[in-house]
Image 1: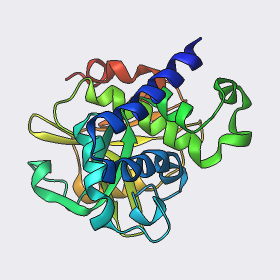
Image 2: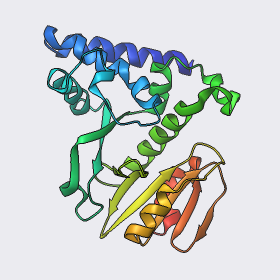
Image 3: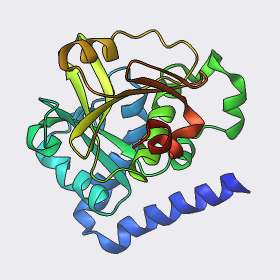
Image 4: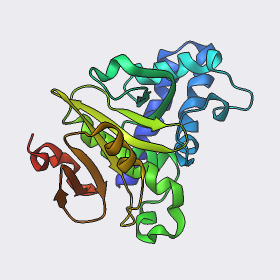
Length: 228
């Protein structure tokens, strides 16, 4: 029943493309929309217009992407050139990721059966991380004002989300399993010495020296566990 509801929602969105958009842009919006699973399946989840359609360029498809953003169907997360206040002042406008408004819709658009979660790590590979990130993003947006950013240092390190809260910037790493080995958050902490940093994973709650690990399913209680 849930799967059918999700599919009905996706069908309704597709119909809305034709109702509210000029004919010349309908196909472009559809191409951007259907490219999202493949965009997020990559190890480097940065959005590439070339992945929308062979030979596609930004000037041809950026209006279509912006329509989806303005309609509230997707979230556009910019890279941050500098994790400083205010975050919005340091956006790298050429580097961004695009997530869907709901992780269930992402799974459905990807044509993944709900039972895939029971297969563990064997089949989901990179896309498991995309689902986890999309899930965490939705939870963060319910608690923090403003759109999160992400941080990367060339090919050396990448932190999944940066959240601005009052006078601090909180780096957030998302791990979709119990294997939490990653140097990216450590690189960030060594460079910028944040007061608090956060990781979501399948591991239990752990806190030490300004670092907090939370199980993925506790994302809606982030502020409570961080004491903010």
